[in-house]
Length: 143
Image (tube, rainbow, N blue to C red):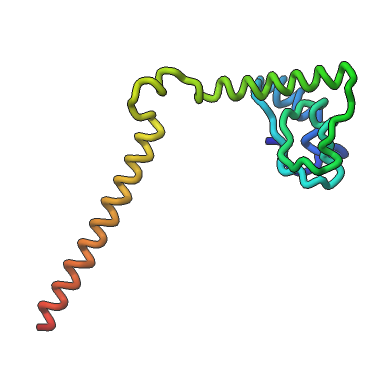
């Protein structure tokens, strides 16, 4: 996600050096880049973002800055690249992993969450048992 701030004189969502040179070039990132919330403040222009390496705009449709009216060849190439990056991210997200979906077993993440839930439940039960035993002990001592 590109941030909601400026880097020098350019917003980070349209900063070619940040998104293409550093992120995709130096770091080798091949997935999609999404903007932070586009509140239609006038500087997060979708056309500038798409042309400079941002793939997806997080905003609302009614903003004038979200309209892509340019039909030039370079704009179409930028949109194709953005579409490729989005589809690459979805296709490689693990959602389409066949082994996990057809095996019927639990994923590692589900096993971790179930283990955490069981540990928290055990701690709560032990704490309640201690409180109950102390309360009974005080009642017997008072009687």
